[in-house]
Amino acid sequence: MLENRKQIILFFFYTIGIIYLSRLLFLQVIDSKYQSLGSTNSIKREVQIPLRGQIYDRTRKLMVANVEVYDMYVVPKNVKDLDTLKFCNLFGIDRHYFDSTLNAAKKFSMKRASLFLRQLSKEDFARVADALIQFQGFTFEQSFFRTYPGNTMSNALGYIGEIPKSQFEEQEEEYYRKGDYIGLTGLEKQYELTLRGQRGVRFKLMNVNAEDKGRYADGEFDTLAVIGKNLYSTIDLEVQQLADSLFQGKVGSVVAIEPSTGEILALGSYPTYAPSLLSGREFSKNFSVLSRDPDKPLLNRATTSFYRPGSTFKLVQAAIGLEMGVITPSTSFVGAPTAFRYHSGAYEAANLNNAIQLSSNPYFFNVFRKVIGNNAETNPFKSARTGLKTWHEIVERFGFGVKLGIDLPGEKKGLLPDVEYYDKIYGKSQWKYSNIYSVSIGEGELGVNVLKLANVAATIANRGYWKTPHLVKGIGFNGEKIDDSKIEKHDTQIDAKHFEAVINGMALVVKAGTGRQAGLPDIEVCGKTGTSQNKKGEDHAIFIAFAPRVNPKIAIAVVVENAGFGGSASAPICGLLIEKYLKRKIERTAYKEQVMSKRYSTVAAGHSKTKIAPVKNAATTRATPPAGEVKKTNQ
Image (tube, rainbow, N blue to C red):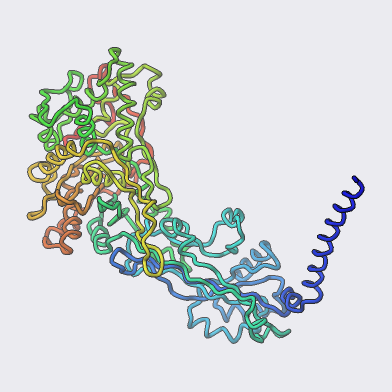
């Protein structure tokens, strides 16, 4: 019985083996098609590079397009009897370039194609195409480079370049070749698989003289290239270009969001650069210059630079205090807590509206003290730990200390201190309210980017929720809408009625407070100024706003580095951008020119700190404000 089973199993394996061997014999010996396809002497395999998808703004204005060019590739093994001097003269290159590039190709592979010369125009290709038959081993492939009709938004759009060596070697599937273009930053990187399309392959019959004898097997084995899909962005090109103009001579960033959808209307980082500088043959040279610029034009400040939010954070503190019931809109605080009397500013605030309008530091010291102490603990150290845990959970729901999920690579979480953070600084159970009070007014150990500031404005405009900020609303040749499931709704879990009280104060800031320069005569703008402490220069100026008050269409944040006060440096920019978006024109042309003409220090040392140093602000042991503390934050 056992012997019979053994015979059956052996028969099964022998049968499978015979089938495989028969198929292999057919493919390699009998079938002439496959036999000739494997012959490199008669069949030439050409890769067809598709055009990359284009990028449009929200009104379908073209922002990123393509120009068709030709790239030359070399297979070192096939280079024979080459007249080097004639070759160099024909293509306008020197001997050093020829030798170094060919040697690099040999080191990569003798049998595989390497990029030799990039981006010949159609005219140049037509001039040299007939002569190429004299130079075995060299072939041309149609390619493209990016052009930028909008000439804006360089940091967010990103750029394409040769695939990095590490990325080339780590490919899960062999798609890219050495020297191929790939999205390296911005939307170009984020949507690489969408924009790149799908390559095609064409097999051609070649005779011994390398002459084209037509398609192999009538194109049976050819595959067509598929053009990359277009991106339809949420950007309003006219608003974006106005932001570029207003930021001339300034360093900083601006982000504008449509509150109800999370669509980003403008996203600028300044100083910037012409996007065409990183497209074409001069990429390496221009990148080297830009990367050494002390003003860091390659840095996307909107998503990666950290600032202390300053007095804009008082709006969040107010909403938390109202939700927890430790204050009401009519609550007043007369004077500051004893430990903080050295701080300048309005010590008395009749109510919350008045406190927001006047940006009263002492008022919000008291609010934070009540929020942190709103628990049953009597020990001040234990009470601070318990209170901070609750506070941290609520503030995080506003998007602080987490990634918002924007469809751009490199977004940073920022810094939102928690119990563990302060334990590391002071020691476990060795800190209390008087050690951490500076976060109550947006200073101390808080770090946010401009995207988060704009998102706070959108959250308040929505009366308590925000949608995932995003830059792309449609993909494809007709702009098919993206999957809405990726655009999440995030609820702060704070009652909408509490935001109305906060908004009342924001309206007063613009009507009769520090943000008057953001006001418009026929549109109610609600905003808040802020001053972000900066040890290495003038303070950074912040302004956040939304408009109109009812059914808001735009929420915006502007940071101008080293500019001092948000009311004079950032609020005017916000007001003009709101006017442009809502009215589709700028009526105050003289005011626009005035704002454009303002210049602020661009000293690199004062720029966008990527780390927020901890501030030990134990007021009970100091007679003067700690370094980096709240010296003039009544904005």
